Length: 129
Image 1 (cartoon, rainbow, N blue to C red):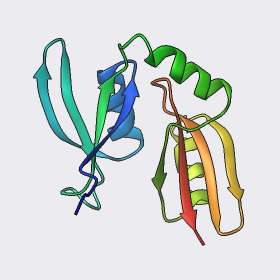
Image 2 (image 1 turned 90 degrees about the vertical axis):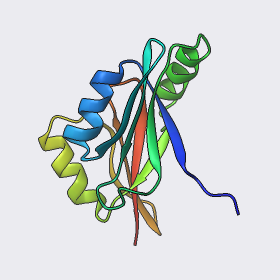
Image 3 (image 1 turned 120 degrees about the horizontal axis):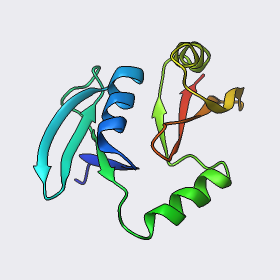
Image 4 (image 1 turned 30 degrees about the horizontal axis):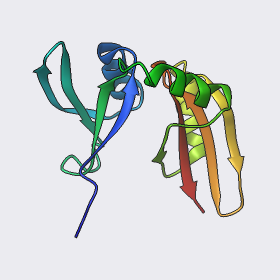
């Protein structure tokens, strides 16, 4: 059986990403090991500290910049996180200064919102009804 162990989000600054993903979003740091000039830096949900890890991966590869800029220009989120209540989470995050490109929107069976992670990505949060 194949399962998801680690997934990545490409970030322009690992220290800035760690602060945003922990201090603002509420993830907790799981792994922080030097790897060459970067770090193997992962965060996890406090609700599942032994679950899927999110790797805050440096976006230094030449193909990444154009890719990320194209997604942001088209309003396409790089990844999605689940929340219990999108409306409440949008209000909480706005209170912490997070900028949204899409406010909480009822899409039928799901409510979604999209925010800027300050590291070059749009991130969607979603909750099923």
